[in-house]
Image (cartoon, rainbow, N blue to C red; front, top):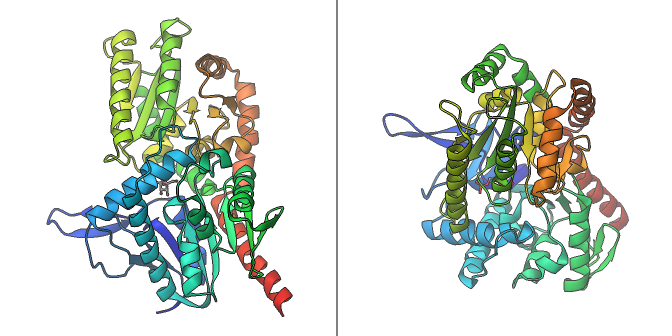
Amino acid sequence: MAHDLVIVANRLPVDRVTGRDGETTWRRSPGGLVSAIEPVMRAGDGVWVGWPGGTEQHLEPFEIDGLHLVPLSMTAEEITEHYEGFSNATLWPLYHDVVAKPEFHREWWDAYTRVNERFAEHAAELAAEGATVWVHDYQLQLVPQMLRERRPDLRIGFYLHIPFPPAELFQQLPWRRQILEGLLGADLIGFQLPGAAQNFVRLVRQRVGHKTHRDRVHLPDGREVRAAAFPISIDAAGFEELASSEPVAERAAAIREALGNPRKIFLGIDRLDYTKGIHARLRAYGELVRDEHFSVEDAVFVQVAVPSREQVEQYRILRDDIDRLVGRLNGDLGRIGRPAISYLHSSYPREEMAALYRAADIMVVTPYRDGMNLVAKEYVACRIEEDGALVLSEFAGAADELRQAWLVNPYDINGMKAALLDAYRAEPKELSRRMKAMRKQIAQHDVKAWADSFLTSLADDGADTDARDS
Ligand code: F6P
């Protein structure tokens, strides 16, 4: 069956659930992307192509809550080389300021190309004449061009969820030209921030030699590609509603109680990733306790680290580092029944996240580099009483919008300590002034507005081109 909208993303928006009888079923994952796109998918009879996780082969298309999903299988070797290798040990560190050293392996590149080819083939088969195909993220940067070769009739959009690096770093990539050309298969390329779009346009001019003007690339065949910023967001109203619910309020109170009702709770929630700056933030907090700015009775730190990419070496090293640091800080600073840091290596459902956000006085989000960071926005959406402080890295995309946060340089431990202390001591009036402004920003720029603005731009640019052609 042909569809008017095809979403192509490395993962399907579902999690596999294995029942007691060993039978697997699917549960919709709570991500914001699917809820944002859902209305458009329904209206346009859309379909979503993606990897469901695991190595199971020959999975049939299926429907969940009326959404059409097409699973694309990967072999164990493809997972190692395409997903863990080229996507997460080459591109991921390269695109995040080389926080870890990217590895370049020719076999990984070959696997990345093969998997991208398969995604493109699937999308080409599923799309109706003149359909819109929206490709997502760094795992699939070759798909736009591969798709255009097969189906020049399509409107193709691409959105990069992570940062796009400056030319000086991107140039390390042995396959830099192929990636740029892959992306140029799209009509519209969306980035989180204007700086990323500018990095891309500059690289296209330097490395591919196409003419560019502001946010447009002019291709020799007359086609135009636009590169622009579309900062992603969250389902703000959904989070607010959840945070306002009785069970979440009760759970938030129970969390505070379980932590011994300290005066203040610091909170970090991150995928366990070396870009997130977890180590430095825990050190900053530990030094504040050590230097007696506050005691563990006054202030505890809850750090949730969601397991992620556990087969990739850098992630294993990080896990050991954090385990060691938490053990040391708790050993040095904790008292009986009062660990300084409550460290949870686990993922939690949205309800528990909302309760944690409501329980926490100071949210600490200190990545070395982050495309956006939705946790920062979720915290703001859940602060229905317009209190609470956000300490936010300048290097998270969210810092462009959440200007009233305590902005920090995560490489500057003393600067972070000063910000944590300032947020800890802030008066209620100051907290509410800042939080009100941030809540207004998030309410006005939610994930629905993000998806609508991307898809409208994609359609409008097409209309412009069609008008010029006729
Ligand atoms: O935002 C970057 C991203 O890689 C997304 O593409 C993905 O949904 C998320 O992080 C989680 O990563 P993974 O799919 O590797 O578990």
